[in-house]
Amino acid sequence: MSILYLDCSMGAAGDMLAASLLGLIPNKEDILSEINSLFDGMASVSAEKAVKCGITGTHFSVLAQGIEEDENIHAHGHHHNDDDHYHQHTSISYIKQLVNSFDIDSRIKDDIISVYDLIAHAESNIHGTDIENIHFHEVGSIDAVADITAVCLLINKISPDYIMASPVCTGSGQVICAHGILPVPAPATADILRGIPVYSGEIKSELCTPTGAALLKHFVSKFGEMPVMTVNAVGYGMGKKDFPVANCVRSFIGEENGKTDKIIELSCNVDDMTGEEISFAVEKFFENGCPEAYTIPINMKKGRPGTLIKVICKAEDRDKFVSLIFKHTTTIGIRESGFNRYVLNREIKTLRSDLGEIRVKCSEGYGSVKYKPEYDDIARIANENGMSLAQVKEALNKADKW
Image (cartoon, rainbow, N blue to C red; front, side, top):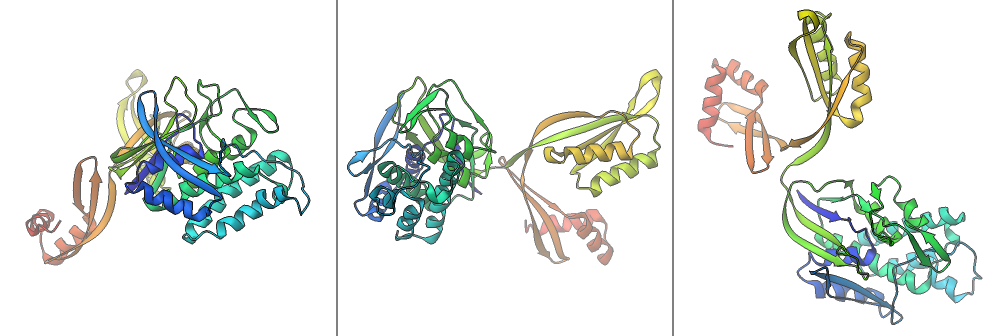
């Protein structure tokens, strides 16, 4: 499975994301030419080498009406007259008309409009007005449309199976925009980032913009640490400002070697339950989707024999299994521990052998490949052919059809 991972430890802005993704593409000039053809002179994009803290990457530049505008699209929240040139060229409806006029795949158009809708809804929430009354700064809005278009086009070209990102550093302090001084993260950015893990960091500057936040919100399926993966290419998207830390967004494209997830272990000790009662409780745990549950004999106070019951589950299922443990055991207290679990990618395949069809669990990842025939199928074949389980397994191994 191909995975795109975005390192947002220095925030995220549209131009930085575009530059980072451009670094993963071998035919950069073709992509830039395609983007420029869409805007037909309204905007001109280019990419040049940039160095931050000794690291060489790419700076993505957009010229709108001959001006390179900072990517700041904080909006007005009030009406303009219908014949106002500013209104005609900065409303959300105009931007959608512009995007729909592009000669590109409809999926890319849908992505661009969805990202801009996130920004417009955030601005309407902040200004307390309908989305139709939101109007962006003219040059800044075209700049942002170019950034968003570039990112959507590049992700479509890269076509990863899955997109992940690190928690997002927003920066701190204040930012100056057309309407005054705003706190960082800016209100619209903070609105878009709801539900996404963020932190301020030590840099006193706006590191995550509304455009960057909206792109992450739209495309990223999961935020967290980089998974175990074989990296094929790395892109460095450089920002305009200089800081003590390299001001860049990094993108990694590669193949995921295996899966990791967060699990918790719930455990309790009991010394007043029979073996049948404990077995019944464990059956109930499995019936409710518990991936793993087991018991360990232990010695308790005053030498009393007891049982340690352990239930493994996903974090989101914690409350369900806590309730089940209290319901089906005599314990009055439950302990919880959290773990990272490393899981091989698993797939059930059907093997056609001389003995008949048999399902095989195929597991792969972290440099290992494993095959395990399903017990029920082995038992069925053994019964049908008057063989032992060992004889069936030996025959399958000799078939060498894994």
